[in-house]
Length: 580
Image 1 (cartoon, helix red, strand yellow):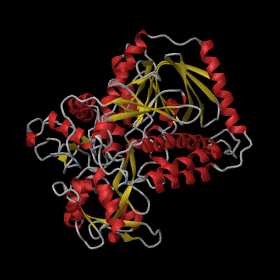
Image 2 (cartoon, rainbow, N blue to C red):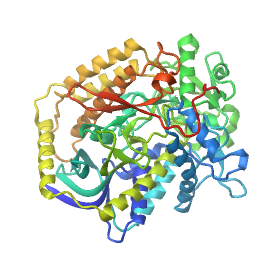
Image 3 (tube, rainbow, N blue to C red):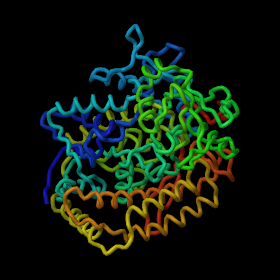
Image 4 (cartoon, one colour):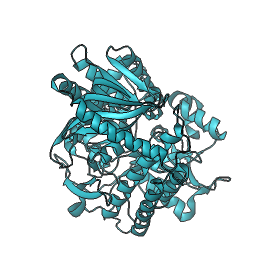
């Protein structure tokens, strides 16, 4: 087995992971070695799918915008569950990140005078979302990848799968996994590790996320005994293309698109009169499903899926081709429909997971005792719960979060690596030996269940009982079914015993992760007796600040997840009724 040493190892190659590598390198002394590990080719990370833009108050005072207004919009959008110190850190640093990406080559869409152009996004009081047409994530990723491939000391390991996070008491020691091209095991020894592996929306079948969004880093932390936070909060994007689930960016509504029911009505007037289609995503998603449940949806022939219309016809071809060229291309190629001439069929799909690994404001991962951090271990991006989004994320704040905390944890990891030491080889090899045995057992066991059948069952359970509206009875049934499914997962068979590009093995490992995270999310949702943000419970229609203004913390145990709660950090804005 190969053993390699790096001062800093980053798992995940999206915007958060690549940003962390670059800023760690810029902050480190010469000779510092940094590795980025990706289970894909790095440029296929899900960040490339981000379409709409990145938020930030680039020109304070313009349009009466300010850091404080951005922070308030974010806190209100979070349904007051966001930690407000983290929100203030986000909004003050986001403009710096937009300028950084400008300097490394992102072609921001601009005003005629050369200023970066901003578009409207849901829940934002003013236009503050910078964008590069409707391919923002791709352009940001391309700029990062071009920059880091020319940076000395950074090596990208494409198509390496990590199965175990190795901890030596209260510090990170290394990572164990395998090279997917050869199947050979590899052990990464490190002083500092950053987890930046994205979210777990693939617990649902109808989702805007790529097949790789399986929460691997979150599951690694959970199995290593580290706490997860707010896992019950899963965002449903209101406008996913029917029947595929491809994202139709919120920018389509930000540019003036209308949502219409089967009667042709702009129904958002009944749900968020002041914001209409640009209300926060949780509100718009509930409105769409409510209209469908009222009988005001449209049924697609073939799939049988019910949907509503996203009408962009009045924007005209010229504006669509300038501001939303990819959306026009996607709909024309996917379903043979030109949005300049016909409405787009859409319905809510799982999109973003607000919950994740419990970190402090600096991105340091918290120990199981909930008081101290794990030395040298960080998380950034969607896999980390700071918490800056609370129970509902505002669109375009995600890219800001990835960039801001990517930089922050990169700098912090560089500090740790400058004075830290490696764990002893003997301790590391002992941990590696256990990890290797467990992986071999996983491959060689005499299973009887197909991983793909298990995945389909899980996604069906989640879509039936953990979708936009949840019920007590449904969540209880879902949790029981997930626990039964865990037994099947323990007997999944890996039929492919080959070493080179064994996608059957990778898929089975990902499905194991999804089941663990679905159990945490569902069990946490059952306990939260209120409706807040993306967690909407039919029997508890109102937000309950007296009992539930707190974060859910989940820790692994033999009986399943066990829960504790910690307070939300409030600096300026006390909870108010959330009206739009």
